[in-house]
Length: 139
Ligand code: HEC
Image (tube, rainbow, N blue to C red; front, side, top):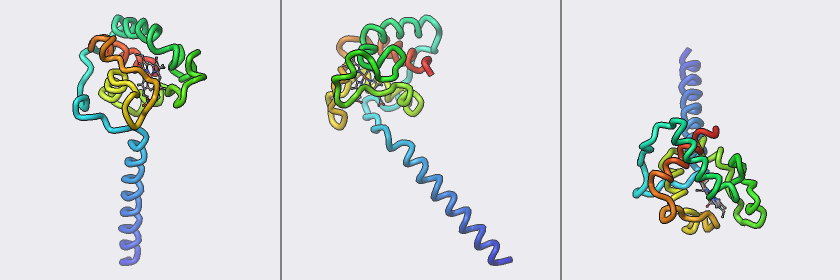
């Protein structure tokens, strides 16, 4: 009986360690959101009007690289290194603050060093949130 309990404790500890590693692995794909952006929340509620406004911005400013459906296969993508991301992956894994940050600041800074343009000077805060709302509606 004592052996069984010991075995049980060992197995449970093992499972806990494994799940902790799993969580660490999940977040390792994405860079941490800097404190200026961490935790900011979307003022829009995902209504049809906001999504439509975001879609118009996406079509004119994002689709050339990220592709019409966010697969990273826009006409300009072929010549880019690194390639534009498949946005569905980021939308699934990241919070709205991450998406806002990446759209606002682009990929000019390390560790991205990419051609992803910063949009904070060309789009208003509301416009960036509209795009975020559109991206989240694409799932
Ligand atoms: C000139 C091409 C280009 C344009 C235009 C562009 N992007 Fe990007 N984008 C990239 C590239 C390349 C990456 C991958 C490298 C990186 O993360 O910086 C990227 C990364 C991203 C990421 C991070 C994805 C992740 O998995 O971490 C998001 C979110 C994003 N773009 C959204 C947008 C949105 C929204 C627009 C339009 C407002 C846009 N991009 C316009 C090239 C572009």
